[in-house]
Length: 224
Image (cartoon, rainbow, N blue to C red; front, side, top):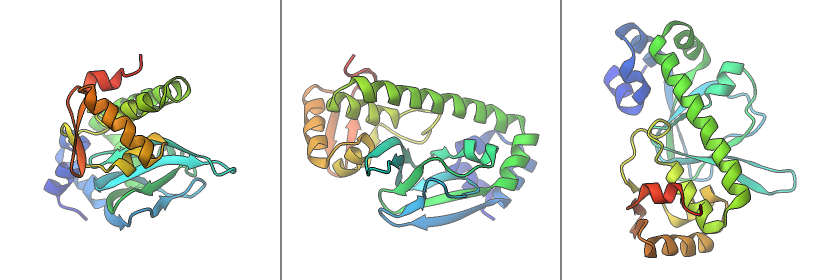
């Protein structure tokens, strides 16, 4: 069982729960660490946890039978994911892999279902979360088919600054160019070229070990 104040630090959704709901939530959460490039789970796995990223970075995506990889979303600290699979009680339809050493908070399905059935605040959060995730995936489908590499990378970075899906991020993102490439579906070399172009255009600033966002709105609409 994790402490109540710790839960509120790692899970923005918990800050709206009442005392009883907090007790139930924290009693159903455990933590686990994963190493760089380690699969957290693979498509088809039974993984009966609603999951939050405490520290680190993970990638949600799939690999086709022909070996082609497609990224759906990056998962940074503060992000919680997998509510759809837990609600439907089904196997996962995607892979999640740690791009660096990553620590997860995992809520068991019994606890998740109790909150779903008893907490108005938790349900309000889930509605907002599912709506934002749907919008994220629709946008991914759109720009994956219509935009060039620089625009895809710009949109991928911008997607990590959704205040509902990633509530704890500042304008500085600790991420390597290799990790940005993995999230955008391009090589590190291409990612470097795209980032330099975006920096020259004044949208972001490249720094050691990360990037600082200068103009988030232009990143969100880059390529239009």
